[in-house]
Length: 505
Image (cartoon, rainbow, N blue to C red):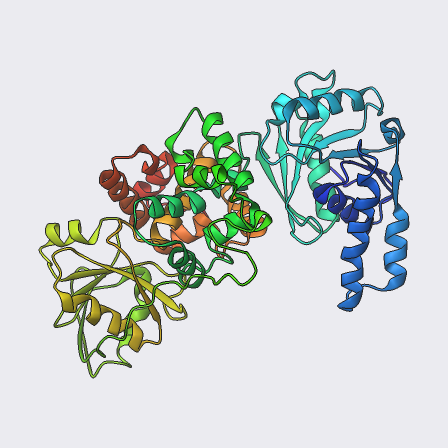
């Protein structure tokens, strides 16, 4: 299906942050835009928000004054919902409540032509449920933009049970003509991004709850070693603890209390105390004037390594083998199980077991585990943890190895899967389950997570880079350690692993 032509009128209901941003996107693509909000004071505020964003583009030399004037002239505020009658596509961005959105669509159905497409910017509500009370539910579709809409490229195009294929195709083509990267999804709770992103917060909260590491160290590990733009705690503070918690709770209930989505008691405690993040001045971090941000853990200097034996292939950590040859006077390669042996300790990439369990099972008492990194050659930080059986020199020797490579070392408590590996494995697992349930394709999944939340890699591409067998093994170990169903490998992930197949050709 072809995109709507630039001459087609676009209606936007809701002049808040998202509605104003969507109106700006449509106007920038050349469409006449009708902007409505039931709160009359919201319309001038929304227009001012758009103008302010465009003024900043002028200041940076990315927009001319003439272009700003032209764009603003395309957006016409209206005072009556009935004035949306000429619109070919109406996108609602009102309060995230099913009854309110349903009432709006029922009103619009009586106003607009039968050919008009009704789209919802909902981030999680069922498109099927939104359309259920309409005479023509086939013209209702999800068109989920990400905040800020003028900047972030991703749009999730979501089909409910009744959505006509042609409607979804037209919306997808229209989003592409607006310069957006659109991905198709079936209507399920959370769609793609909000569903797959839950482990990024949930695993960090689980580590905090169990005393594995502190907030600042977890954030630093996922930023500096994992390559994420923001750590989970600072991101929850930015989003708002109330909003983030509400999404988790909604998904938990929508998936019939699947433990993968169980909300956190720690986050509930923040809400009870009114600590909502940046907007309240305090969340996991203190944003009051003069407040000092806590520093992530950094190990004291350890001894520089002299003799190292690299036993077997190191898998994702293989770049360390070449780097070690430049900092140690003697490095030997032998066959073996993928370990780095020093006189004082043995280092191994985490496989989802605790260091204490692995040391006992493999008979390596002086064991120190290190965490996954996006790029071991470039990472600025490495996280390590020692087995309970290890002596006092093991951690210092392990820290010295990575410090000799120019990396900051954070020591945490002996936690299964450490920080980055368990997070990446759970993101990949949730992505695999989403694909396996027919919500979207693997390509759409990875594109959505990169385009919608700026992940350094798509979760399924990342899993293939690590090795699907390694991911399944880590999940099995986490499930065994915690006795928790939340870590069960997705059937499709296990199937791909057993079959020697990939998600991407």
